[in-house]
Amino acid sequence: MGSGIAHVCALAGFSTLLYDNQAAALPQALQNIAANLARQVKKQSISNAQATAAQANIQTQTAIGSWLSAADFIIEAVSEDRAIKQALYQQVRPYVAADAIFASNTSSYAIGALAAATPNAANFIGMHFMNPVPMMPLVEIITATGTSEHAYQQTQALAQKLGKQTIRAADRPGFITNRVLFPLLNEAAHVLHEGTGNVCDIDNAMKLGMNHPMGPLALADFIGLDTCLAILNVLYEGLQEEKFRPCPLFAELVAAGCLGRKSGVGFYDYRTDTVQPAARFS
Image (cartoon, rainbow, N blue to C red; front, side, top):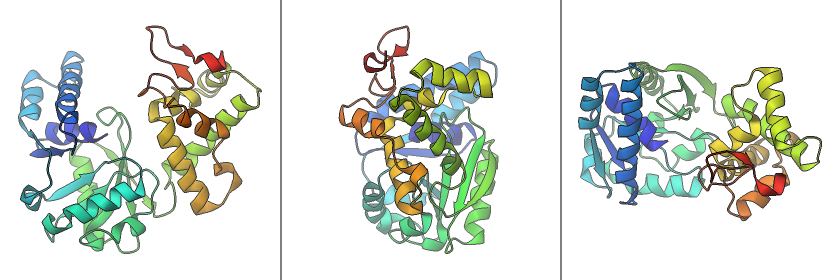
């Protein structure tokens, strides 16, 4: 997500600094950005000159420091883990300019609760991009009680400059997008777990019967089953509704290291040219 956000910011002409505390992750991120820009050139959605300029707009950093003080807008896109996010906020706190807008790409955590660890709660906001960021047109903007209208207006303006359309959500667990989506993913896992349908039939039911571009189990694999489990837990803890209690399959697969596309196996097996249901679901 971080590299995707950097991609669209740089392509829009913004000087973009991509930070990761794992130095080895940055060359791969830059390679991914270059490859995605090349695909856009091939599709003639951007020019070679635009792709070249976008790459020139990106610099990288592996250590938090005074470079942050020059940032007008900061977007955090670390793992969907409250403790990791809040620890990062404490690290950057001394360097964030007083008037900088600080956004989290969280897909489930309450913005008001996260804001307590940030330098300026009035300038803290949720900016939830959809994955893959360069392709998906939506940005969900989440405002907490303490978020200023100025921060909202600045965030909406940035999203529009990135070529995105926006929706505004109140600060409730899961916001709009995941509050609606995750009961579907969870129920698909329950249907598989209880044997009502197999992996392919469940996904085909939604693709062919409901015109969804991707089946719910394939989508869960794309998101990452660990991320799905984390989001469902946040929704269940925050809303206390049974429909959000994670299907046991999520915990079982995550415990086994089967995280979906990023690990090679989830509901499907992605380790060969032909994607098939994972062995345990065949």
